[in-house]
Image (cartoon, rainbow, N blue to C red; front, side, top):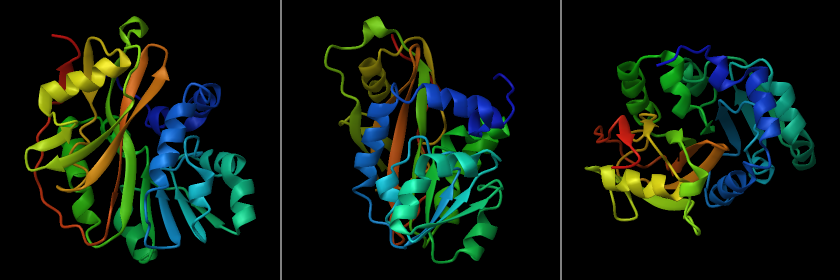
Length: 267
């Protein structure tokens, strides 16, 4: 695995410049995330937004639901760019914005104690944890503990599930770019499929080729929680499948997972 500075994936000017340039390419994905967010029912009017960065793919209308947002990110560029993207809308709704520069996962218990009534949302950060810790076993173990750490809290996440190279010539004429999913005791179930068959179904929709990466996030949501898978054409030759889900405070937590870390797009 190539070694990266953690801000290569969680922020920094390189990321923000890329996001700015790719806004049109990512527009359909952003719209799909907004549609999914509109279906969520956060229990609190205070939002703890973990890894929100500049909110390039966030929905201002959804953010306006809250009376206060606490933006938590290690990226020092995040606060000003988040205000650039959403400040006017938040001002219009009277939503207060507080910014905290820290590692939201590392300091999660501190944040939970400081904001005991807040709903939490992880904005495209959990899928990057693998690159930030640079150790698959550690990343997998820590991600599998997220739900347990948040037991009794109201929270959601959108994160990378799979990513890899694509060939535009392999994209179907009418691709399916969104799927409903649910995690059961055997793992993730998508369109009635699981495991290798499910992987191939997803990758075929975006023209996936060669080996794809599993971001070891399939165990983030508790068993029984429904989620939405959303295709993200990250670059002309590279794509992601995102997973978006919301967990009510009353959902019980179980500890099991069933996934493959790497898989082939074609047989």
